[in-house]
Each structure stands twice: as structure tokens, then as C-alpha cells.
Length: 197
Image 1 (spheres, rainbow, N blue to C red):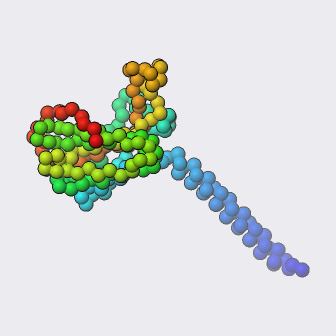
Image 2: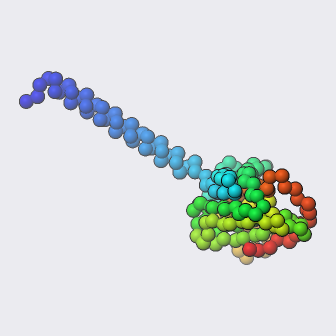
Image 3: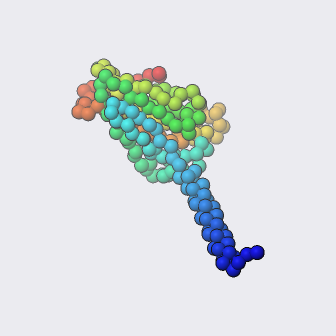
């Protein structure tokens, strides 16, 4: 047999439990809605004593939808986003891409200053084949910077798909790093042909 005081205590406990359940459900809904929708991947860079998380100039889904902050195909100007990670001569930059980038093909465009001029080295990384790259800066090949570009599944100006001679593959995201050593000045600005790694 319950006393009147017991009924009151049970009613208060039941109300408190209901409030906690509603609070937990509300917080869970907020976390689920904000965690996935606002996620933009970053590229991790370690150069000397510097560690930076590189934000993209823009980032889209593989099919070039849901672009943040803007769709590069329709924006009048895509915002410039360049991270600074000075890489001293004689050291190595470690660059790591997240799964969102490595799960599809991605390019690394590294620019070097050489005695003969500026040399860009292009590396194509296949899907799920590489997450981390090492880029070494030497006296005869000074690392100036690197761009990471993640490949989309959309072709531009290609009415016949892969058979279109004029078509180009779009990039779903671009990440840029300024790696020029502190105080370094390029002496020969002659642009040399690209090479493949």
C-alpha cells in the first residue's frame, strides 16, 4: 500500500525521467543534423615544427552538388584559401589526406624552384592507394608549394561523355599549401614543362 507521499515522489521522478528522455532525444537530433551536413574535410600537413589543417577553397560532393562555400562552375570568383607551412631546405613535408579524398582518385601538384627554373611535379594517386605523401626540399629542388585536387565524377563540356574530345574532369575540392622556406627568393622564374611522379 502506497502512502500519499510515495505517490507524489513517484510522480516527480516520472516527470524528471520524461524530461531527461526529451532532452537526450533533442540533443541527439541536433548532433546528427549538424555533424554530417557541415563536415568539410581537411588535409594535414607537417613541415618542420609546423602542423596545419588545410581547409579547401571549395568542397563538393562527388557529383558536384552541395558545394561549400560555392559551386566553382557558377561562382564569379572562388575564394582563395592557402595555408602556410614553410618547409626548410633539407627537410621533408608530410602531407596526409583524409578518407573523403583518398577514397577516389586525387592529384598532387608540387611546385619546385630549380637552377633551370620552376618545375611542377604532378602525381596521380589512385582510389584508396595512398593517404600520405612525402615532399622533400633540397638546395637544387626547393619546395615552393603544393595543391591537392580531389576528382569529381562529373565531366564538363563533354556532351558525349568520355568520348568528348573537349571535355574535362571537374575537381570536387582544391587544397593549397604555401611551402616556400622563410626568407627564400626564387631566382629563376622560367616555367619548365610539367613532369609526372
